[in-house]
Image (cartoon, rainbow, N blue to C red):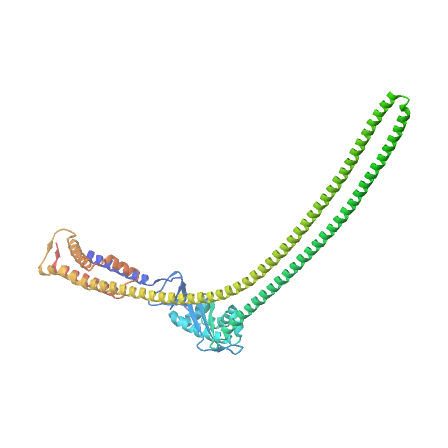
Length: 526
């Protein structure tokens, strides 16, 4: 009996320890990096848990949540706002805000947004940002806002930051999506810029065409001057050549006349000599006929030799003079022709160079004009693409935020349903456990007395009853498709606690009481 009571006491202690561990496990919390768990209740200041684990003391402390993730706020002016130059416009912007992570920011955010969802926080931030944006619009001119969106965004951000900081929020980014007006003033500003660009391009093209025409005229003038100069120089050279040819002919004629005169003088001299010789021969004829005949032959031979020699020399000199004159004439003609060809080639080269320079200048000016038009078109396309991209990013962020919120809600719902299902199974099990124990022990009540021999038989009897009860309860759990070990694991990790713990305590006490009464009523130990 004492052993049984001791065994029952140990079971109670084990159950108490399990209950204490379950209570401690229920107080274990682990915060993700994008949420702050605020644990309050003990101490003057609440504990903030971000991205780490902590213990919450049950019944004495409570835990609240604060969302730290980035929140996208679509800020639009509800109505047209007049600018500094009195033009009514509508402004559309996307602002990203989040809870400040410093100590002061966390404290302010606790007071304003504890356990609040993103929709509420975004709504509050939107009102503050819209008011500050309307205020900045009234201090700037339309042209400045459209041409420098970043300056406008920075001014709104600087103006709104102190107001949001008082709530515990920081502005991460501020992007202006669009400026619109009902009078079409913004469109007219673009048309004015386009007209200005077209005007500048037209002026540049006209200047280029003018410069090309001037360069072409200058090239034509220079080419014509070069051609006239070449013609004049050729004529001068031809004139010089004719004069030189006349001088050479004069010299040739003089030389020819001198040669003819010398020939006639020589001929007369020869004739005189012949006559003298003939006279002498006639005088000497009488003296010596043989000597006369010999002298006649000798004289005749000398005369013939002289005539042939003089004629040959004269003819040779004439031919030499004619050849020299002809050679000099051909040389001068060749030099004149060469000089003329060189001047023509240089003139033609100068004309082609001027034409090439004029064409190059024209192509360069045309390329500059085309480049200016291309840059203007590129700038307009980039601005349009930037607006489309920013709008697409904003829409994508909105869709993403909505999808994340829906997914988180579904996860929480599924987790709650799982907890309810486990708790219901556990409650059913512990409600049936006393009836199972009673049914196992009930046959013993029909026995008047049980006589058992030997020590430890009572313990064995209780063990058999407990084993039967365990087998029946395990069969019940197997029939329901549930593992008792998994259910107890759920208890230790904080799930399915509420009704399951109460049912477990009641079932254990009822089972123990039933076994105790049955055994004590129907057994004796001998």
